[in-house]
Image 1 (cartoon, rainbow, N blue to C red):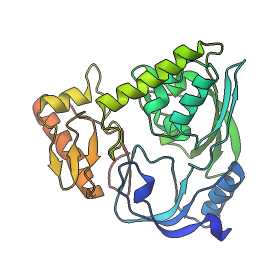
Image 2: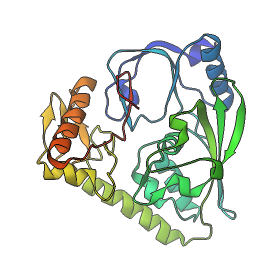
Image 3: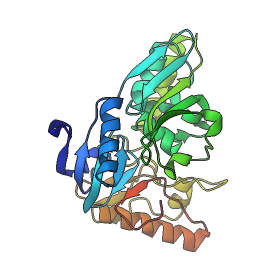
Length: 297
């Protein structure tokens, strides 16, 4: 293993948007698919557990030693856009705001909603991230993956991927997303698309604690309901545990007031779940992925 691509006992707190996290026994940031594949191979050969993170925007990492290898994909950001066909090829570390702005500049329609989501393409496919009825799954053609058990690389067509609300099979299998091919509507009205993209970002900033350390939405919306409304109805806005606070701006956001620990945030998530379950009879399922906690993911 090339030492410069590889760190030991690496602090992960700056690699999550909520700014908490433990220490990775081994940590790497590959710059391309070749380096990425070698890291997966190293983990397999050395019988090390391997965890993949993107922008860390939907991630709570416990403040403990995380055994094995943690790979961050953020440097894998190759992006090719064909403006006439609307075909897009992107590596898993491409940030959604970068993708959204790049599509708008090429006159491609359908990615305007993604501008305010601080995640990577790989993370968005893994979580089936979206807003309302919109998600990247709608635009997906295929996903290129590597099987971490067999080290085989192959492409999976969208029709063979069973996406559900905030769920993809990648959450439960041994396949790691390397890159994706997508399609967006070509020949759109430049000005209109760019304006819509700007408006979407403006709306996010006005309605969410966009510039404070947070995950984005903490809980999935229950069927025919909204997590934010349920939490708000319980009067939980502003509730704090340690340095973690339920945002006063948007009840489905937990913010880190500079001093929160992962334990504070985990406890606040649990308290919200208990209170909503007791009073409303609804169990709120976290959207947030958790590493290093005894929590069913």
